[in-house]
Length: 153
Image (cartoon, rainbow, N blue to C red):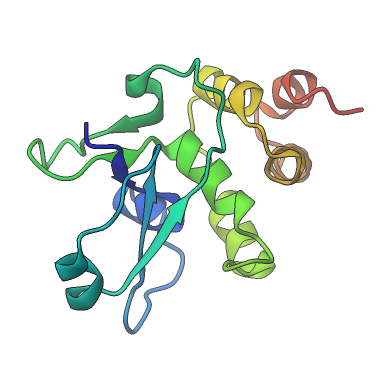
């Protein structure tokens, strides 16, 4: 793995959690370490590039990213649970509250154990709090476990 992966809202769309269709979609790419996008990629595609260390290093690669089943040779894409927290970390920065909340409301198929594992590894309090708050509001089956793992009252 090169350290680059499709992330956040773009990754969620690739996993089937699309809320709105954009006229000209911005592909969100996150990097690990000191990775950089090649110049040709920045000029050819509508990309938003982020180098942020949102998770503790103890998350295994297969728990963070995958290749989509229909694209075994395709790009690395964040697992849905990781992508959710990536998207929540961007609320108020590059992502709007309403659309983000609507996307999360449709995420009833996330894997509870993976979601709790991602929350436990997430270093951004804002993302964890939004996730736990909205999970309880939407009455997701993993909401109570997420609250406990996220160490929130």
